[in-house]
Image (cartoon, rainbow, N blue to C red; front, side, top):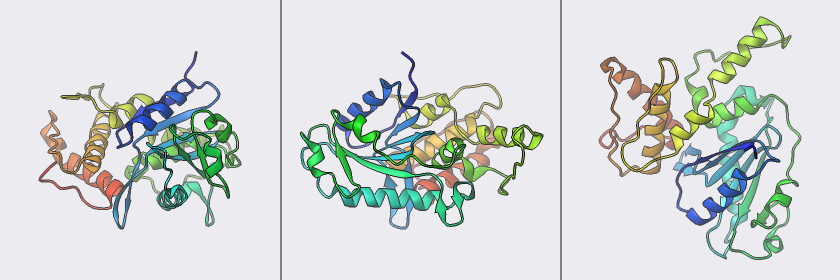
Length: 273
């Protein structure tokens, strides 16, 4: 069985529902894209705003999951609106994802509550609440009309990689088979973490985690992203980032600072990092 959705397991405070929905996507062959647990963390004027779970798909666009641990859905409609508005504001800063004032990638929201029976009784007015029994049916109801070719750009924006690209000017491609078209595809692929890099950034092991790879494989970016992500998730932790090349210190500080601002809206606490 081929796994068409790459599952990246970060951390949040909702372990049961996170495990249930991650296992659902890990077993799926109908869907494509990347599914994140505990990612991204969005910087807002009020501080860090963590998303419970997120699915980015070339077919469906973006689906935000509001995870519910118990049997009380609470004000799930407000939570869905809040998460969608904050992610939309983040993505609207990227010109490649915009047409005039319209975001080209649809943002859908679902509240997932595996412990609630007959969850459809809570759904209505465009707000979905589901469990494992009707999750697939709910996903099939989502809005799917969007521009093709934006999957990599969307991933790059969510992963914060596009913030370090030097070329801020949008490359206009008239022919896909031209040199400019090939260069744009190369730029888009470079500005997106591959599956292994994404897992290295978000997934955490007990003890020392070592980032290794060939020269030019993206170790510096991955390490800086991971440090910023862990610091955003656990600002009280004392995190040590070690590296062998002394000349990289300034670059690491700049990258970690940039990624931290993206995720929390403020510079990191260098006393703990």
